Image (cartoon, rainbow over all chains, first blue to last red; front, side):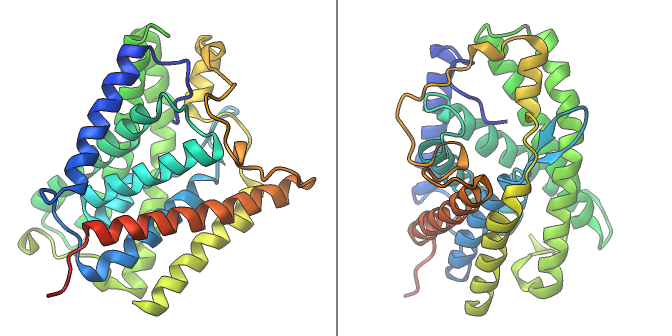
Length: 214
Length: 95
């Protein structure tokens, strides 16, 4: 979902760069919730794993591939602010070092995969936590949140493309949402698999207490 | 935590080094949509700033698999270091 340069017009990429910059400023300021001292190494690991996993494009359908994004996983492990910083770190390194995603589009990519994906996944995850009276809530919440994070950020990409005049929204929206419906399932499966692994070996890293825990 | 930092880093490096050469080279979701809807030619291939390791291939290595693996290892360590530094900025301090 990394947008290259050329797809977005100046007003779109510059607005999104300002928006991402503003979120970055809050995330780095004292206003955002701090991670605990014990979580500091976990933030490095989560970012490293997400970068590595994003390299692995899996074939999905009809000559199309998709890779893990990791926004939901990062938010569950470290909260939404740290997750935003993790996504921004991964995207900045991918752009500057590996030429993956445009330089002018970097703010847009951070907005889509940092703000939109983390925010929407986190919202879904917490809605499930709040309303599902079952110990299995976190499995539903993480899968559902991961799926929504992919599909909604794909929809936002379609809107940005149409605002830029690259393609009509009525074409771009169903196409982007359609293919990412499948990629979102892959996202959900990988997110859940990683969480199940952590749940087995280090359950203390996951605050899975449910509604009563918050 | 200490032991698990190494476990996590080892898993990440293994994914980046061992699995990356086998990644699908099919277009991703956005690239597929751009091709299908005919706006893929808008993409500017020439970068505004040249990258040291373009397209996840370390330059000067003839084996594409090895070049990809090395790119994965370098990127994983780089991202780990930057995120760890950021974590210290946004992490609570004792005392």
